[in-house]
Length: 144
Image (cartoon, rainbow, N blue to C red):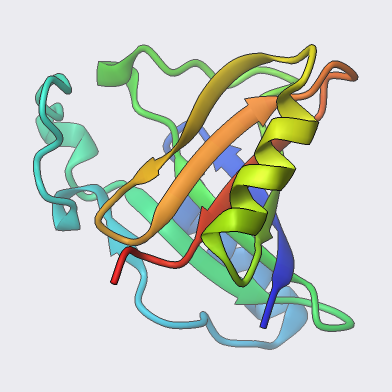
């Protein structure tokens, strides 16, 4: 079933923030909390700094009304710097890869900071900043 989440970026304090939100909303994380060192090496990507290995790659927490917030730590080794505009993303999880492609094409038109959907180890992923300055992430089903 398709769903939408709010994705939050942090500069090294994602775990602290999400443990705080967990207490405030009195809920538990959905699924596994993935850390950067849980990810297989990405071809061509810089090596993780030792201090980044235990950083949060992905965490999900239900809050109110069926909404889930998700989060990650941005990585210094990848040149990531947190700023207003890249700290919040709307994450769309369509049911099909075709719908991921359709939404990406429409939302990226005239936009910037684009990464067209590609197969990743967790599924079909892409991201763009639309022409209005809103960041959208796309997560579709993995290739069968």
